[in-house]
Each structure stands twice: as C-alpha cells, then as structure tokens.
Length: 196
Ligand SMILES: C[S@@+](CC[C@H](N)C(=O)[O-])C[C@H]1O[C@@H](n2cnc3c(N)ncnc32)[C@H](O)[C@@H]1O
Image 1 (spheres, rainbow, N blue to C red):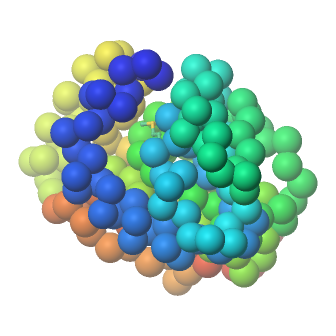
Image 2 (spheres, rainbow, N blue to C red; image 1 turned 135 degrees about the horizontal axis):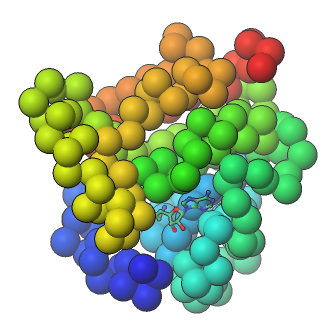
C-alpha cells in the first residue's frame, strides 16, 4: 500500500492532521516513532526532538526518507516493532499513529515499546479501536475481514486491553475520545512498576 497510502488517506487527513499536531507537541528528547509509514508526522515534531522512525515495510521507509531529507534530526530504519534492535530504556518518548490496527501481534509490539521507552518516559498514541457500543462493536467484528484482507488493518482492535496485557498500569493510561469512542488519543507514563 506504500505508494497509494498518502492518496487513500488524504480524505481523512484534515481531521487527522490537527490530532497529529496536538499529540506530537508533547514529544520531547530522544523519540521513537513506531510504524512511521510514509512519514506524515515528521513535520509536526517540535524543535529539539531527535527522531528515530521505524517501519517493517521497506517501501514505506523509502517514501518517508524523501519527506525526511530536509531534517537532520531524523533517522529511519526498517525494523519490526515486535522485535526491536534497541536497548532497554533507549527513548524519552515513543509515538504511534494508526499503527496498532495493523501490527500482527499487538501485545508483543506494545511490550517492546514498554521495554525500549525509559522508565518515566511518555508513550503517545493516536489509534482507532473497536467501539464499546454493543451494536457498533459487533458490526466492526463482522466487517473486520474486509479491511484486513484489502489493506492489512483491523478495525476491531481492543487496544486498551492490549496495553494492560503488555504490562501497562491502568492508572498511568490517559484516554481521550477524538471521534466517537473509535479514534482515541492515548497517553501513557511508562512507570514500569510491573515485572513481566
Ligand atoms: C496505517 S499505517 C500508519 C502510518 C503512519 N504512522 C501514519 O500515521 O500515517 C501503519 C504502518 O504501520 C506499519 N507496521 C505495522 N506493523 C508493523 C510492525 N510490526 N513493525 C513495524 N511497522 C509496522 C505498517 O507498515 C504501516 O506503515
């Protein structure tokens, strides 16, 4: 989807770009963006952020490199979020936007984020999830195979529950609904109190 991604996503970008700006204004220090895709967030990072972006799609990284060419604070690598080549406690901030719909094993990806983010660091997420509304949630379950097979994205991910399975503590997770209860801003302080 790499070559079509920006075009297909364009109709949603008006709303998304405001949410991206708002979320990324909180990034600071050594920052990791997981599933950076075509690099749509790069222009929204505040000055002073030293950004590492990863994606497991070489084609996505190729396009992101073009967007990053005028930024000397950005480095990009092909890497799987489920098994990252970074040491524990490497980053002050970890960012994801519209990623945990498509990571094949989301709990493993979230465990890796918890590992590579420093204790006390921040995890900033903009994600769409399964609705808690009974009928809408059920419809999302029924419809899920379609987007999954067309472009590899699940529309019924239970990301809050996955965060808990990955070891994050509920009291450190702040969630704001941005569009019904489906698109959410999730911010987490990485307390690392639980030993996994
Ligand atoms: C819907 S796109 C979002 C791209 C970008 N974050 C944005 O906001 O436009 C999801 C991205 O996550 C990447 N991705 C999914 N699973 C991944 C994994 N296990 N490791 C690294 N990247 C992954 C995909 O390749 C894709 O580029």
